[in-house]
Each structure stands twice: as C-alpha cells, then as structure tokens.
Image: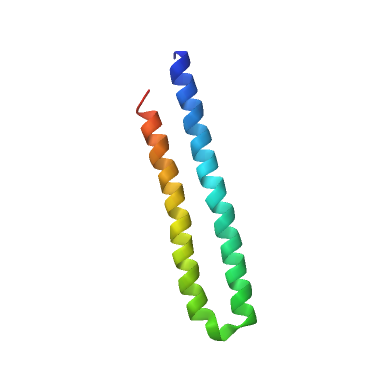
Length: 77
C-alpha cells in the first residue's frame, strides 16, 4: 500500500467517525428533549413527535452525506 492509499484510508475512517458521532449525539439530545416535553405537556405529544421525527430525518441525512464522501474517497484509492 503506498502512502496516498494509506492517507485516503485514514481520511475515510475519520470521515465516518465524525459523520456518525455528531448526528448520534444530536439525535440523542433531540429525543431526550422531546420525551421531556411530552412528559411535561402530554397534550402536545403529536406535534412534538412529528417535529422530532422530521429533525431526526435531517440529522440522519448528515450521516448519509458523510457515508457518500467516504465512498467517494474510498473509490479514489
């Protein structure tokens, strides 16, 4: 394995690590706050759930972009 391939492999590992940790922390925080909001005001549970699912979908798209960049880097090898 030459030096360029090794650097690309390291970049792929870093991209996937950062792209999964960030949204995972955000999703955990969003879910915790939504559950807290539902516990405090059960009458708005439907609205909070809908908003939370939409926010989780946006966060998950960031992870998929990271995966896309990792694949692009991986195919450069």
